[in-house]
Image (cartoon, helix red, strand yellow):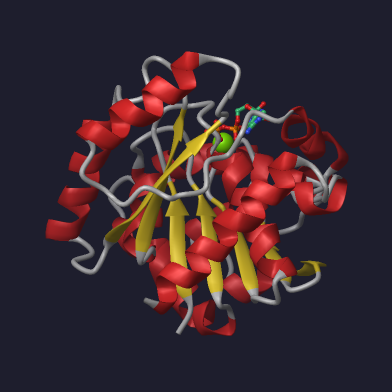
Length: 255
Ligand SMILES: Nc1ncnc2c1ncn2[C@@H]1O[C@H](COP(=O)(O)OP(=O)(O)O)[C@@H](O)[C@H]1O
Ligand SMILES: [Mg+2]
């Protein structure tokens, strides 16, 4: 059965898209069949995996407004073992289009259910908001993976996010789980990163991934070449750490 993981945190700039891109590509490189599903109108997951977001014919927006079925939107084998369901700025209008629509929380789920068993993993990149797009991702997903940036305000907004996940569990998707927390942009040269990790471990009663993603310039460069890190610079610390994270994610599913 395919596992669907939503990468969510309503804070911007915490490493959601970087994690979504590189977890997807790392899983694919290990032979897992992956669907990378971009739910952010910024379309950075789409372009970061090498799909020209401004020249795609059908996107997740068309799917959300009921224009087409999901098969028509998927770009196959963008990378070996990895398909992309692209998005672009059009998706920013979806929120408005959904006003008054029945079952608007489940539109994505109804479509993804049709294809999810063709994949070992569907990885959903969420926008930086607790919006109807994020709710759609959470009703579709089996679990939510939360990237936390190693910075002073790391815990800010986290209780709101967990509350939202609990509301979705109660009202819309009783099987939704919190996959866990992954620390991103860890800077070994500062005490702050270490303090943040310790502080979150002490205060957050959630699964925390052993793999910590370091701050690595190669991770920031790769998207401008439309490549995930394992293709752009497979020997970088960033590539190594996302491989380890992918192994942990696979292993967790086997527990
Ligand atoms: N581990 C990292 N090392 C260096 N830069 C990173 C790392 N993770 C993310 N970045 C950079 O930080 C910025 C925000 O990351 P992004 O993944 O887009 O966050 P989000 O999707 O949560 O808004 C981007 O410019 C990205 O390239
Ligand atoms: Mg993003």
